[in-house]
Image (cartoon, rainbow, N blue to C red; front, side):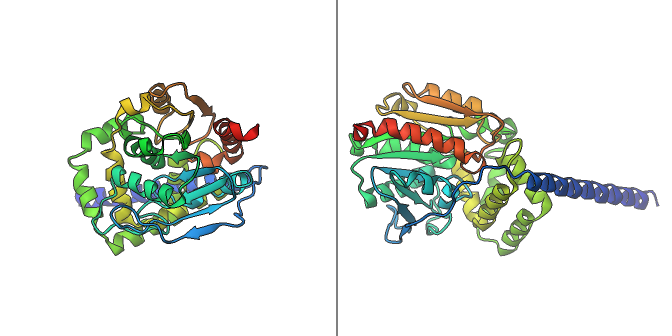
Length: 344
């Protein structure tokens, strides 16, 4: 009888806790939707030309597309995102530049590698394949989150071949340090990886339809909204942007997420390459980034010669969605510097 009463009490406690979480999540959503913000920026990309003919070094199909004309700006997204995260930056910047977005392997409309390799070395090859396909006379690379990891690995491996044509580098909410050094619960993750966390990742690296459906259903739920808001955004994010991010995340195959997560955990950069960077650089971070802290981004900027460091206040990890106007003004200022000879 005592066991039954304990089990019943535990069940009741769990039900009440779940109800509280669900109710809190709903209240947060209501608040966010009532204060969407006054800034309504253009998100419709005009004249976007897709490309389906690009293959990475290992043969994986990589989707890319561009809008606008002029010096080229490559925008590289982060984990569980795709090129559409730049939905405000592309229409704004394409008025002056040729803006190229790509979907990294396993994300968006790009293919899933047959060998299952999503390492940052392969991501750098994805980016190189796109740069080669567009063959720009002069260009700037901008990477957000895992896209920043991709840009750093590209600099390690491919930058010498583009000397004189690469004009600048932008790193948004990213780091040249190990991921867990700037991540919430980073020390705990360090203590659990590789063992036993690697076992869970290995399990999820294989396509599992039931798990995929469960995860997709979670992201559509009220607690899913609350978790996404906490992980990817700051104090007062527009609900439409939280919704947009959780849609992107839900659309990313779970096994591709697991493979990319392993790649991020094992990511390392040769810091001597950064010290030799001979083009202008811009490092952007935010005070409420819980995935890659402002301190981690600041330490990264110290590894580079004379970068401009910008810190957005009260903003989280998803700066392209949460503060697009501020971001675009910083990018416009930086790109004018990189391509200043064209302004003469």
